[in-house]
Image 1 (spheres, one colour):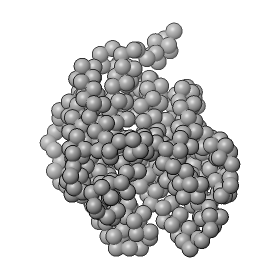
Image 2: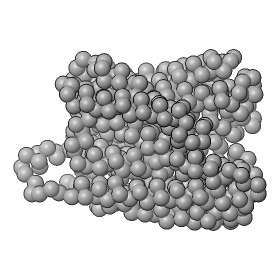
Image 3: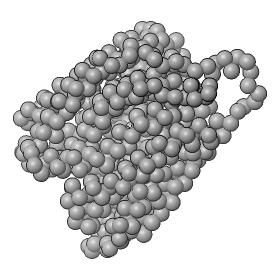
Image 4: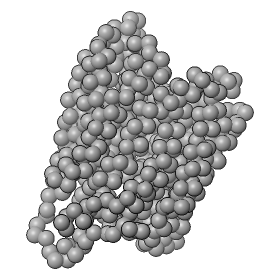
Length: 484
C-alpha cells in the first residue's frame, strides 16, 4: 500500500509532462527537418551548399553555446520563466526564418532560433525531474526522453512532406502555432520552482564554455564536410575547444559557485551515467546517418519513403517505453542499460553484411530490434542519473547531460561519416557502394560494443558501497512534486 502511494503518478504530473513534451518535440524536430531542405534552400536562395549548410551548423552551434547557461538562468529566474521565454524566442526565430529573403538573414535568424531551442530540452527535463521526484522518475522520464529519440526518424519524413506540398518557408512557419500553444499552456500549467540560490553569474566560466563547446562541436562537424580528421578546419577548432573546456573544468573546481558544478561527477552513479550517455549518444546518433543514406543512394527511395522505412526503430523504442521504468526499478539502470546495448549490438550485426538486394522486411525487423535496445539503454540511464541527485543539483545536472549527449552524438556522426566516405570512395557499382555501408556499420557495431563498458561501470556504481546509515536513509526521503 505504501509502495503504491509513493510511486503512483498523479494526473497533475502527466499534465506537466504533456506541456513540456510539446515544446521539446517542436525544438528537436526542427534540427532534423531542416537538414532535408538544404538543397532546396540553396537553389531558392541562389547560394552554394557549402554556404547554406550554415543554416544547420549555425543552429547547432547556438544550441551548444547556450546550454551551459541554462542552470544559472533557471536558478535566477525560475525554470518556468526560462522555459516560457525559450519557447517565445524559438517561435520568434522560426517566424523570422520563414520570411528570410537571403541565406545571410536565414542563417542569422537560425542562430536566434537556436538560442531559444537550446534551453528548451534541459529546462524541460529539469522541470520533470523536480515535479516527478526520485520515486516516480523512471515512469515519467521514459516518456520525456522519447522526443529526443524519435526526432531523427520523424524529422526527415515531415520535412519531405512539407517540401513536396508547400514552400520551404513552412518548415519554419509550422513552429509558430505550436509555439504559441506551448507558451500559453506553460504559463497556465507549469509550476514555479526553487532550484537554489543562483549566486553571481560566473562570467569567466561563461566565456570559457560559450567559446569552448561550440568550437569543439564545430570542429567535429567539419569532419563530415572535409572527409578527414587531419584537416586544419577540424584540428584547430577541436584543440581550441578542448583547451577551453579543460580551462573551464579547472576554473569550476576552484570557483565558489561555477557556471556548472563539475563536482557532481564525484557522485558515482551520476558520473557513470554521464559516461554511459556519452557512449550511447555516439552509438545511437552516429548510426542514424547511415540508413537514410543507404535507402536513398543504394535503393533509390524518396525522402518520404525513407522516413517511413526508418519508423520501425521508433516503434521499437515505443514498445519498451512502458516496461523500461519497471525493469529499472527492479534490476537497476546499469543492468538494464547493459542488456539494452547488447540488444542494440545484436540488431546492428546484420547491417554489417548489408547489400543491394537485402530484404527491406528483414532490415525493418532489425531496425525494430535496434529500437528496443535503444529504449532499454537510454531511458534507464537518464532515470538513474537524475534520481541520484538532490533537487538543488538538477539545474547543474541537466545542462551537462545534454551537452555530453550532443558531443557524443557529434563524435559518432563524424566518425561514421568519414568511414562511409572513405569506404565508398571509388565505388563504381551499387554493390561496391553497398559494401561501403557494410564497412561503416562494422564501425557502428564497434561503437555500440564499446558502449557496453560504461554501462558495466554504471552497473557497478549502483551497487551499495556498504551498510546504509541512518543519515543516508533520511537523505533518500522522497521529494514531493510541486503542486501535488
